[in-house]
Image 1 (cartoon, rainbow, N blue to C red):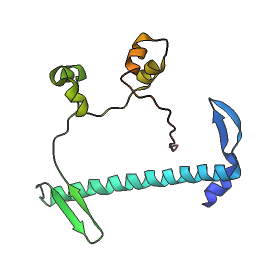
Image 2 (image 1 turned 45 degrees about the vertical axis):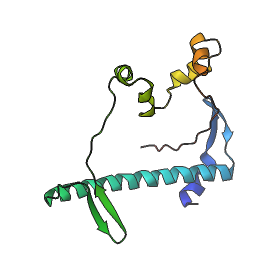
Image 3 (image 1 turned 90 degrees about the horizontal axis):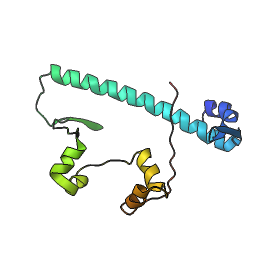
Image 4 (image 1 turned 90 degrees about the vertical axis):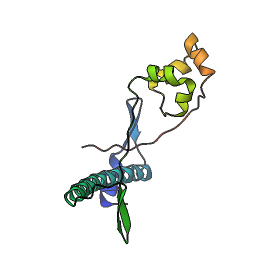
Amino acid sequence: MSAIAKEASALVSIEVGGETRGLATEKLAAAVMEAIELKHQIKSMENLLNDALERVKVEVKKAGLSERPLHLVSDIGKVSLTRGPSVSIADLEGAYGVMGKRLLKLISARPKADLIELVCDADNPIGTKLRSYCTVKERESISVRIKR
């Protein structure tokens, strides 16, 4: 555990539904602080990586290397540049009209909060119908966000 995590470990409050319920134990607080600190480091490294990749693109262009795929290989790894189409669906209903259910096998999507609420509403007749086409499971998630 880093010095920052140790020093700040007593400052982690427990909040449930917007209500503060006290302070985390020393071990929990230390784990929370370590996770936040690691997230900061990862974010910094992602920014450095993105900057380096932009420099690679600039230098590749300067070198006149326009063929793709292009692999720049060293003894510790490689950077690959590829080119290909990117597709996003602007009119889902129109695309569904053309493809029907086959379209659903070709795209991915996550349900929005409104759909989850609708499916879980026992008093809503549409929700009741939708439930027969859905799988509802309880899930737990964990995430780390950093303050800028």
